[in-house]
Length: 631
Image: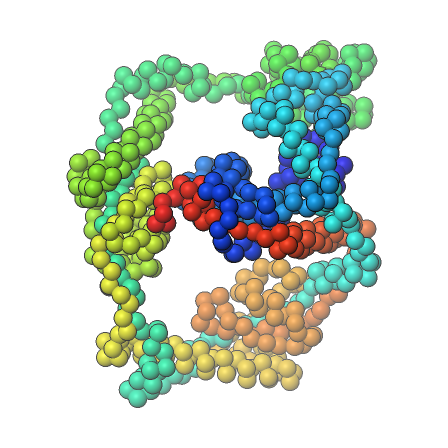
């Protein structure tokens, strides 16, 4: 594992993140909160404190990582919704526990060992294989670290790795265990099924008042008016701000002229590139390649795969080696180049297709330029308005007063419950972020100053709680028709389950699915061999899993996808798994070893945390997250 850590700078960073994420997802036992740390410490593990600054830096790294994965920058609220705050805290406390163990064991990695590793790392070497200080410094700039900081981090991480390497040393996975898991995973079953039409099987009589009253008394929690709140809502949305912006033709023209090349469509080419270790080898092959009727076949004859030489359709700017790019875009369609000495290799090129570039005029891109200007200005304007509203709030002004002053959308919602419904049970707020806004309204308390909620379009919502109407139990007469509908639905489900049980009994006694389906005009469907994770139209995941608990010709029933019908299921055939190939066995063994290693790390770090003790300073944590004391 330590060897894998050192194979490359990128691999090193990924390795750290992977190991620490194992901790983060597996370890959530940080519930014991007590005094005993400095005011600037978010948490403490044994005698090791995690500072606010350390937490904020790690938290920002987590946000950056997930933002890259989802393709857009997470807001503070989105980061909390993802649980990145707790994930960061878990990761840091796990690391601190390992550091305490490293210190107790007296482990240390000499700086000269790290330095030697850096010098031998191919990622930090030039073309001649010598250590490149420039490449190393560039990597440090990407990480935002000084050289001393990088070495310190590496020393600490390698020392932790010595501990985890001992814990996660691959355990023996027997062939019998691999075969057992393979048979379980690869077994397939052929299933026939049909959906029961409840309307043709169940006839639920209309209940009398006594039955309804009894159902109401037994299920009063179904018939309550949920807590409702009166909210003041100020919404600052991107579309609202953009609608008020005036973008003149002169501004559009200036923006186009300042960056007109960006709007042009560059020439693109389909390029074949055969690479050689040196110029002599390229010149030796040049004659054959230039005269060949089929360039690809000639390259294959020299030992190259088509996938290795086909660069696809590329633009000049996307080619890394500028000298090769110049040569490639100087050739005519169908022409084969002479050997071209690039920065790292010598190549022979052939141009297969050429798509000419296009110069786009202002008229062509006027709408696009205007939209880009509008977007940029809206972002700036929203930030400005946000700050002004916050100033008004700090001065004690109401949301309504702030909205009137800056022309922002304001409304009062007379009554809304946690599900976003009004007293008429219809949505009381129509907005893409309604759930987020309502949640904030039910988190806040009347009279509190609350931070704005970040909206998905980059805007903001301010919510004040004006009044709270507590939950109350509704009288029978007021909800009688709801009780009737609920009673009939419950009785229908009960009778349908009973009918399905009778059908299953008949199936297990040998009656055919087709004969039973005729009684309710059901359509019998039959699958091919399906695995445990198969997705089958007409069958829920639960139904598929139930099918794998049955013997051949065994039958059962399961809820249908609509939650109202039931599906009859019978196993027609069981197809045992074929013997695992070497590739399958090796892959399965690797997966099982990784799982065992993960379990071992989780258990070990959890034990260290229990041993050293973990405490969290909630006030400092809120401060680190930029949250007010009321949150």
